[in-house]
Image (tube, rainbow, N blue to C red):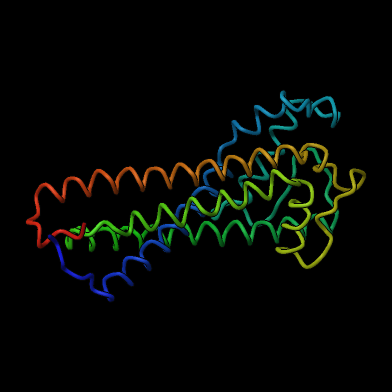
Length: 228
C-alpha cells in the first residue's frame, strides 16, 4: 500500500499552476470568441440584423471587422467606422472596451508562458495533479455563470456593464451611435455561450489528459514513487 504523504509545498505549487491555467483558459476563451468572426456573420442572417438596422450586409460586416481589428492588442489606436457615425461618448466607451480586451489579451499571453513553464517543470516531477485541480476549478465557473445567465440574461448583461464601466456611455442612442443597431443583445448572449462552451471544453481536456497521464504514470512508476 502506498503511504507516501504529499509534500505541502508541491501541493501549493500544483494549486498555483492550476490557477494560472484557469486564468489562461478563461482569457483564451474570451480572445478566441472575440476573433471568431463567423459567429457574427452567422448572426447577421440569423438575427435579421440587416432588416432591423437598415444597413446592408456588406456595410455591417465592414463596420464589425473594423471594430474587431480595433479591439485587438496590435490593432489601430483610433476607431473609425467606415459608414457609421459615432458620438464622443461612444468613442470613449469603445476606448474603455479596448482597454479591457487588451488587458485580457495580455493576461492570455502571460498565463500561457507561465503555464507552459509550469507544465514543463511538473512534467519532470511526473506530477499531474494540477490538471485535476484545473479541471475542477474551471468547470465550476461556467456552471455558476451559466445558471446566472439562464435565469436573467438581460439583467446579467446590465450588471456586467455596471461592474466594468463607471459611466453610462454604453447605453447608446441609435441616432448618435448607430453601431448599436448592428450589435443586438442576442449576439452578446451567443458570445457569452461560446466563451462558456470553450471554458467547459478546456476543463474537459484537462480532465481527460489528467486521466491518461495518471494511468501512464501508474504503469511506469514504482508504487512508492506514484502520487496516485
